[in-house]
Image (cartoon, rainbow, N blue to C red; front, side):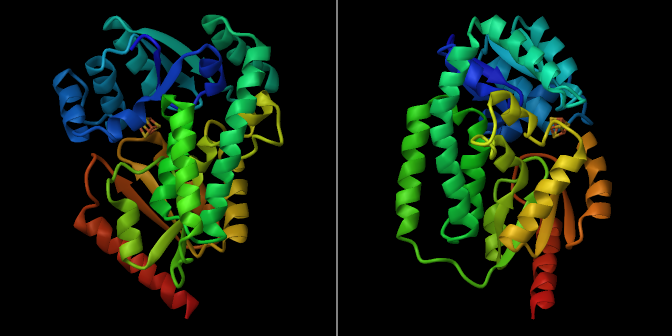
Length: 330
Ligand code: SF4
């Protein structure tokens, strides 16, 4: 476990790899574990209140149960709950390294934040740039995966989600991640294109539901744009240096960048409707107001609380939304 560094959200992962260490996205570890619901209950038994988001509780449980020694806590540009979570983990003996994206999106401030992280891990800019080149080769393949999703229509919404969401840490194992991605791309080339599906864009933090994408496909839709998950893959990796790459990452900054990104996707991917997922007790729910005011195509807002299957009321709302979009097309 010594080589493993937990991360509470996407950070400049090039720095961790340059140090010869293995990043582990704690959100992904929590949600892909065998008993994610149990992790939430266990955190509540440890004292976390009911009205704290399930992701925070899940992170707490996996860090303490898996005995992480070091965690990078994103304390700016992500979630204010992480600040208090970091202090609780410190009290449990975990070394917590803060990292913050600057609210003003200033290049100098981001350079300072990255240099603090680099100093902690004793890595140079040169080493980080070299690591970026290695990661960029994988990021290019993720772009291909994305194009296979919305241009060739041979990748499912879930497959797209899975690889994009995992690009926050590349499973802590670049070789294995790249090999599995290559395998999927090769296999997908042999698939017939999917047709006659309602093209959906997914907005917001990754879903806590375990069968979300399958349900949408079952009802006649397909997610061809995973907004935030795609952002984890740093889609502008080849247009920017490493600092610019993390400045163009939309998630930590204001809504304007997100809206521009979403508008481009609507045009480029022919999106017919958007599903905005919000997490119970998350401040990001408030962004729904801005998204609805600024975006012109239909939006369905959903809310999820604990890990598990989509509840029947939400499933019915998804079905009705897709049926409505089919009607718009006819
Ligand atoms: S879903 Fe919202 S409240 Fe929960 S960890 Fe993420 S940003 Fe924080």
